[in-house]
Amino acid sequence: MTLRLLVELLLLAAIWGASFIFMRIGSPEFGPILFMALRTLTASLFLLPLVFYTKKHSAFKGYKAKIFVVGIFNTAIPFVLFGYATLTLSGGLTSVLNATTPMFGAIVAYLWFRDKLTVSASFGLLIGFIGVYLLMLDKITLGQQNILLPTLAALSASLCYGISANYTKKYLTGVSSTVLATGSQVSATLVLLPIGLFFIPTQIPSNAAIMSVLLLGILCTGVAYIIFFNLIANLGPSKAMSVTYLIPAFGLFWGSLFLDEVITTSMIIGCGFILTGVALATGLLKLSKRKIDKSKTNIDFK
Image 1 (cartoon, rainbow, N blue to C red):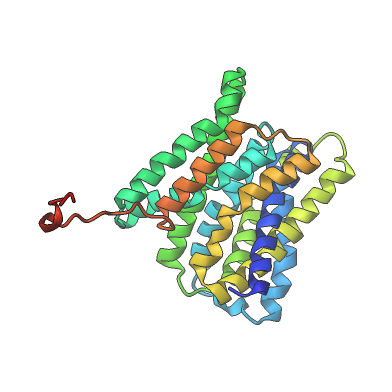
Image 2: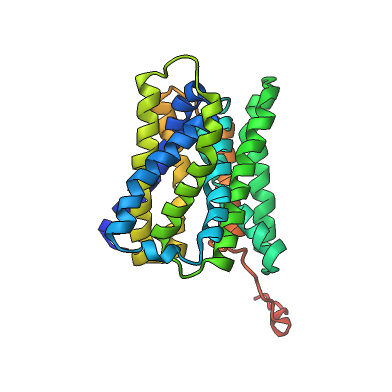
């Protein structure tokens, strides 16, 4: 990996880590549905000219329905669920829960495609979900019982990402990533915007909330996708997806820096468990297999 690509990878993780902070700022004022509708609308307006400029709009033919499905499971539903989660959970916590996406992807692949689930992967799933429990342990012991639904919402959003990734693999392999990204944003906008109009806030949102929408749509979606596409082209999908392991660190850091979110010991330990579980579940780490040669089991003490 060249220095330029490494910088791009870190930049992408920093941008996507910041997205949870913007959600934390804007979602309470706009409401999760309208906020995410405006995010996808902004992203659509940013990405559509790019598709036409690169003359890739013809790639939509024959795939509109399938891209619409991706837009629902990869954008509309998870965006709203994460928006709801950040009403209660910190941006840092939500970014860590988002890191469970590859684990859910492995589960969906096993149930859908019957992909082999190795011992390492199975152990990784267990470790990862123990990490989720540890991540929330201090809040549970403090009696914050209202975190259950937001936590389930964030995990459900990650499950949606896992479903979408496998759906894309099955039905949309070979379709331009730019087309998929743009189509998913436009599809989500068509679904969310009409619903979001029923949830227009009674008070005008603050400048910070409005800026959060714009930054989410342009920076965390439009610009981030362009960087991600470039990484996929130069590093391949697997290495590009390693950004998943870096996002929680930036999410926790930005939350602490800008929103004074407290990083507790249980959060750090839980984050470590989750990332270890993800690494095992996706094959990045594997449990060592020590093959014992029976012919060499006799030990000669000298």
